[in-house]
Image 1 (tube, rainbow, N blue to C red):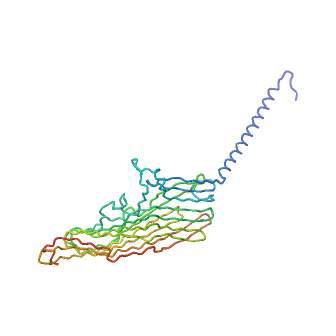
Image 2: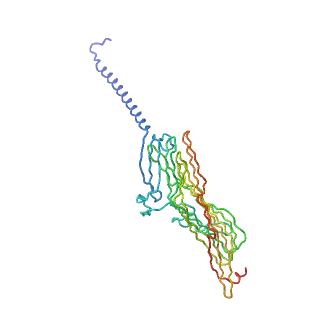
Image 3: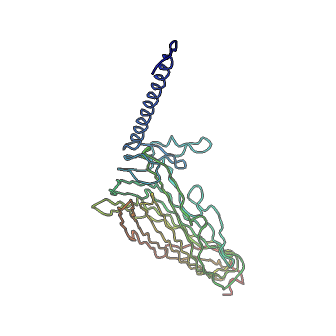
Length: 391
């Protein structure tokens, strides 16, 4: 190439070299960015492990969540990439100060959960005092209330379930049913079944992600489906009420499954207190058959469920004695019955992950069968008159 005399070509060459250098620098930066991004993705995909404890306030009850999770980072929507997960949730009395109640109050040191049907806030009585039945009958103070500490423990890895424990401790169940009849006398019997409101669906008491970034979702649900079956015939000259309540202490009840060992259960013999209910303003005769069927149902992460089924039966008769003697007699109305119940335990493990599947079932198995002949007895005096004595 011939350069004309007087032409200065050096600035053009320098500009060319500058453009080349800028291009090379840009390419280098792009390569570094790509490498950094790859390293970041690799770091995110690399297995991580996290172990710890967390205090969670379920209502105003302190629970300690312990976890040991290892695996690839995920959002908790599946167990893909999880290598190990050991999770437990149990009541923790020593952490009760972390869970203040409403309006700044501090809950008691050992306040238990209350589950049931038509139970009040104290877990000792009925929320709705009267529930309508049919044909002039009402159910007064009808409720089921179970106070207990629920817990669970899960230990699993990507290809196996190692152990599962679930149950309730310090279980106390109160059940009450009293039939109330108005002054309208009728020989027509009333037969039916009533599902107590609010018991048809389980409710979630805990739902959270633990072990993140290798997230595992923990979901704990409890249901108490409850029905009242009744077969009633009643004749009276006034209003009347007849029924009974049961107070049952069951202690600890749980189920445990371990790989290679199978199922083991824990249960205790119950103690039962019965209290009859009777009110009569005049002559009354009745056959009262009441049965409360309830089930305390615990479900954990769609992996295992545990049921405690209870069916208190209250067959009762109301009788009238008009009295006798030369003086104005005292008449009385009495109630007598033979209460009974059975408690049945059942559990199911159903684990599905990729192509690995584990299923095991326990029960149904009868834990207790209890009855007491003449366990319901009470009498109430009423002043006899001529109409009452004509029987």
